[in-house]
Amino acid sequence: MAEMRQADLPGVGRKYCLKTHDGGQLVLILHHDGRREIYIVDQDEEPLASVTLHDDEARQAGAILGGAFFMPQALANLQVRLKGIRIEWFPVSPDSPVAGRTIGGLGVRQAAGVSVIAALREEECLPNPGPDYRIQAGDILVVAGTREGVAAFDALVSPAPGSPME
Image (cartoon, rainbow, N blue to C red; front, side):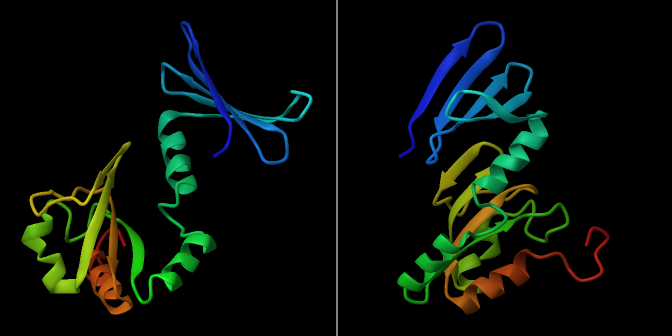
């Protein structure tokens, strides 16, 4: 695991320093007001670049870095090792037919032959959500199943063709 340090910044927020594999650092400052400052620092502790993100931008960047929108090749290779079992991430759009419904009410296992193994909502991750879990727009559902089952679940979650938000 990468080396990380953290420190409280009284009146400001918290600072995190992550040492990178090339000897540099990634410095993150999380402000109490939701802003995030990100600095790339070289081996001599000189800033090379910086960016400031608002709360919603930081959350979206975090989801991207966490693999919510794209499965890195290393994870794709894991699928091969699972011998036919696929693990996929499905963001739930506001016009998805599953928004507002429970996992049990959808009959996910019967309808698509997959299991919902996690639900991501904002900053929380709920592993193995039960049948009473009510799916909301903005959730990311992580499912496991066969290629055919994952495709069936995609059809279940996807908005109907021609929907206003498509």
